[in-house]
Amino acid sequence: MLQPHQPPARYALGFLVLIAIVVGASAAAFAYTAGWFSPQRLTPDKIVDALTPPGVDVLGHRRNHAKGICFTGVFEANGAGSALSKAQVFTRGQYPALGRFNLATPNPNAADATVRVRGFGLRISTPDGQQWRMAMIDPPVFPVSTPQAFYDLLLASGSKDPDAMKTFAGAHPEIAAFGGWAKTAPWTGSYAEERFNSLDSFIFTDGSGAEHAVRWSLVPAAQPVPVATADLAKRGPDFLEQEITDRVHTAPQHWTMVVTVANPGDPTADPSKAWPEDRRTVDVGTLTVQQIEAEPDGPCRDINFDPTVLPAGIRTSDDPFPAARSSAYAKSYDRRTAEAKDYPRTTTGAKP
Ligand code: HEM
Image (cartoon, rainbow, N blue to C red; front, top):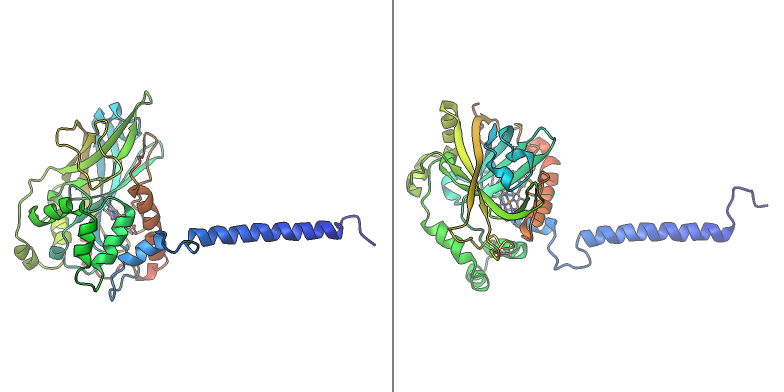
């Protein structure tokens, strides 16, 4: 006989069908996210796999910008940025900063003089509990217009086909601006002499609710001194870490944060396109690097400088890169933190 708390057979069947639908839908969602339904779709796994150089042990390291050195310091806002964004980070005052000088290579053992692009990860924290994370590089433009093109560039540069890069450049003429910079811009002997650029565009919202499309740069106080690459190579494979450690030990190093405001119609969705030189700029404060921190097991190890971690008053724009970067950085972070016992083994290490 049917007990009062037992559902009739047709209800039990209904429950089973419902459970099957929920489980099936979850499995389908996972399969979609993993790209199983659309093998041509760009996924974070694919992009991070494409970054990984064959034959190089990357365990425990960031899957790009693998070689670097951590620092702590302070961002001093002068108040001028408040006209553009209501974020507390622009209110006059001092806010703690944590960051990482780095080289744009997935090879943690690369010699410093062989890597053209230098980078800068930064997190500024404010008393309202918000954070502004960013990751900038020293070229004035990004090589390509879209995340898909970045992936195709990774495949072309790793291809055995001797014409792969030529074919890629033919299909992506926007790479010429970056190529021109890479060939002609002087190299320097110090992270402290580099200008680091957001390249991606973001939207600042001011106190009245008005929005401003912007990019920003950290402009060094130190005068850049050009050095021939042959001379840099003679300084040893890890000279950049040693130089910045010694330099900061001698005196704190400063960068001015300069925000560039777009005119209507300026391209915000394409970091390979520079904005005209005459755009309005606002100096919003000074970043001071006060101390070099240990890279192995130091405070930068477990941070992801995800450019979509933004305080209220800054948001992403129609630029497709930050979202693609966020998912790739998260994938890289997942992989390297799961390999924590291997992290990192190859740097010279800092002498704070
Ligand atoms: C689709 C394009 C891009 C992809 C797939 C990509 C991928 C990555 C990955 C996987 C990491 C390592 C993240 C981690 O493990 O914490 C990384 C770090 C970094 N990326 Fe990108 N990136 C892209 C575009 C850019 C752009 C446009 C910039 C600068 C304007 C940039 C600057 C940096 C910097 C400075 C770091 C090092 C941050 C750190 O020290 O942790 N990347 N990138």
